[in-house]
Length: 370
Image: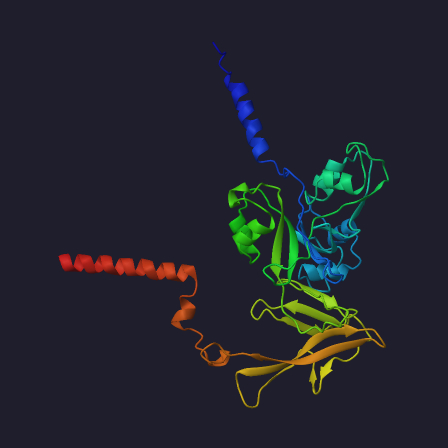
């Protein structure tokens, strides 16, 4: 006859199993598919979503990831250019890093690196310093370390964070390396970052949404704004997602992404660089817009087209024409601001309408009975 398991022992076993199921460490290293092989397409700028284990500053984040510019960190997080280095870092904080495709997978190129301190193990570096963005196996393989528990103090380690440069659905995107927090869902992540559940499952080769683990490193594609940048420009591969901006053309131009038009909105910077060449389209300066003389539905904008440095530093600009009317040919100014469609556009409004109809029908029923 089997001896019954004492209650305390059973409780301990249950807690142990529960802790394993909630472990923030993914079962395997993340490998993001990155199949681009053309010289221009095999490298890109990717984003990493980093959640610092403790409160920290922007300067500390910049030092950890060896970012060359404080302004680049501000731009990735949509912070004002005047934000000081001592300001607290948001959590999570977005870090822009170069990504390289090789052998069907992508990894951040040469950065970040980490200098081993006394008492460090590769697991502590992976899960502590870099908050689970990478596994100790990845670091060991990248640095030819045979014993992950034995690393020399002062040893310089390359930390290869997973990334990608591939288009998604035929469209260019900015890939975000994201660690799924406990309690999150694929649907919630997709909604937060403006993509679909199916896209996240396909990119991360997940059988279904239920297979998501706490601490799993995900490839989340961020839609990038369309632009008029010339294919011959130095910054021809410029990709800007929503809720961020980029400084380009030697910090002379600031480009943001509008989630309304999904067009790149570029303006000359003010006071960052003293010697910037003028960017004009005839009589229009960069960013200026004029309406058509023949149609109130058309507007012409002096749009940023990149910069060159072949003979001299030059900022390119082209005139682009876009429609500002809806499908019915009504311009935004002529559309009623409090139409029924606008008041009932959200699911909450529709719910209010349905509840109101139910109440009205119930009242009618009582009236008929009386």
